[in-house]
Amino acid sequence: MDQAIIKSDRLSVYYGRQRGVHNLDMQVVPGEVYGFLGPNGAGKTTTIRVLMDIIRPTAGRASVFGLDCQKDGVRIRHRVGYLPGELNLYAHMRADQYLKMVAAVRGNSVETTYYDNLCSQLDLDTRRQMQTYSHGNKQKVGLVAAFMGKPDLLILDEPTSGLDPLAQQTVLELVRQARSEGRTVFFSSHNLSEVQAVCDRVGIIRDGQLVAAEQVENLTRKQFHRLRLTLEQNPPNEAFDLPGVSLISREDKTFTLEITDNLNETLARSVNYQVLDLETQPVTLEEVFMAYYGEGRRNEDV
Image 1: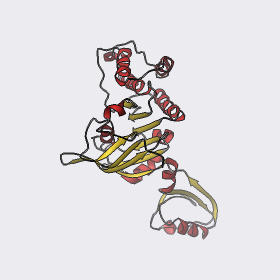
Image 2: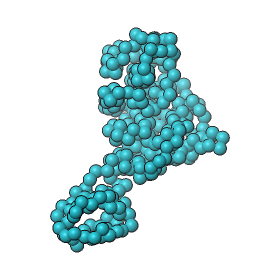
Image 3: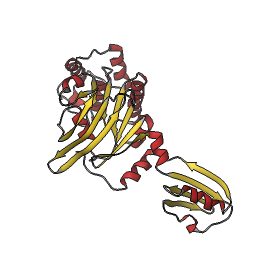
Image 4: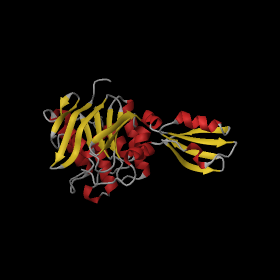
């Protein structure tokens, strides 16, 4: 793996007895879009706040560009475009004034044409006071602030929150463009379809621990298979009663199975009933996610 842009080593954060993240080992390499995936409360925002030196770890360490997040926070932030999950803006300031201030604080040089294109693509009128904005327009201000300096690294925490579908697609295109220019994107989200659409790799965090880190296509391929079998003979329902095999649906002689184990045995049994058609159906990232979490695991973010 190339020199990591983001790296954490046994990173742990505790809020009293409550665990934010625990022994988190993570690497993000140059030029990739890394999806950081998990439900509210899993530890996504906690991890980002450590990377941006907003909070300090209980144990372990994190680095960005090879710099220690706690010792070199100022140097890191000059090279990062950051969109927080909870965006606080100055209500009585115009958006263009705010964005000019952000650029000055970061020491960024902003290309006027690129800045204008960002505002146009996001349909944002920056001449208004931010107290007049809807939640979606405030989110657009945060997005322009993150992208406008063309930073080496973008850290985006739920970047499409509050946006309409057209604006959501614009954000995904901006992410793709950043990747095409060789920049790195850390894309934290619970929106599974977005992660699947733009990310090269995904890390799944559960209860403060990274439970998977894999190329998106590999992750969806290796967790389980879904087969649709059409047979000439009519087998009993228990024909595929094997460990790791679940019958999802049956229509006459057509079976849809989800298989985590005993794939070969399943295929061998199907031959006994003369296979007329066999189709491998794609597995979505959402289905992989639910395989890790199960239904009903929803908490408030930490």
